Figure 1 (cartoon, one colour):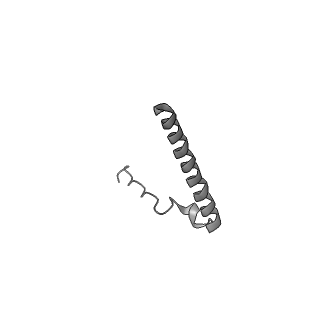
Figure 2 (tube, rainbow, N blue to C red):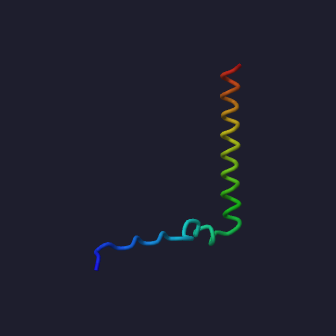
Figure 3 (cartoon, rainbow, N blue to C red):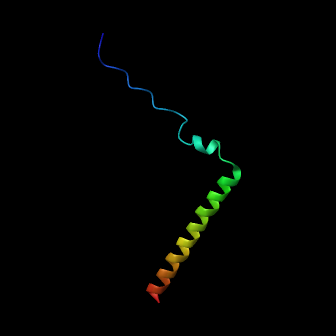
Length: 54
């Protein structure tokens, strides 16, 4: 009898479980917010670059 125990197997398939129960509207809303923020960041970066190079 050895005191050494086998390591527990890593949990599989539990990473994105919360997305299985979200409605399509919630995902679309989150995507809309994400892309809106990305566009706002791109505009801000463009404005800063334009102001710096002007």
